[in-house]
Image 1 (cartoon, helix red, strand yellow):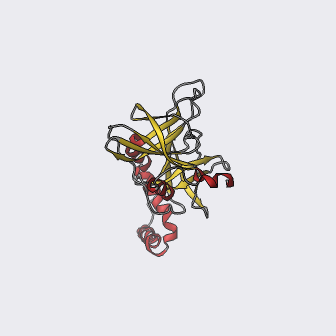
Image 2 (tube, rainbow, N blue to C red):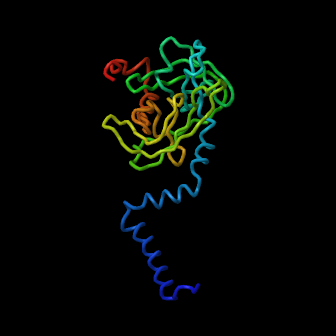
Image 3 (cartoon, rainbow, N blue to C red):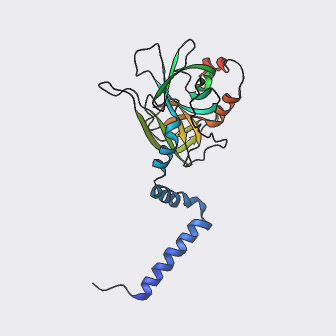
Length: 243
């Protein structure tokens, strides 16, 4: 085999170089493909999971023996003697005694506030344990942005303790109610878990799986921030009948 002519090699080099320039500066709409390749090469998913996993917890009603009825939560605030956790409202029903497992330890928790219309609940765990809270993003996710869902899957077939799982997807739709639709496969048990961006910031909370095959609904991180800033008892209960 003969090597290609020098002029052909030079032409190919310049074509490749200027193509990259065009993609980077002239046609930003093409850039996600370049960014995707670079992001996957960095292995950001593993980094995000390692960074945030210690703050993701398992939540379940202590009075119910069926351990498959459980959810996920994540630490959002840590103060002296207390840790606050965001989870889904459907596992934190009124009158339930809740258990929270984080960092291999179990604590009792109580409901601090609920936004039933958005399926969010804010729990408080009374403990002196120092647990790093996850940063919550105030900006809306972008269409095409990658999201990493982290949570505890339901009880495995044949028994055993639920373990953490991860699911990767792309933000495919933003609803007029501020919900985020991601084309990943959420698993029952991961409800209440965080949707994380490439930097490990929370941009949503898993609310509903299996809306359509391969899609999962997340409540916007701004709703979680509003719930954290709400004082007093339950809010949005009147909206529960409308959903």
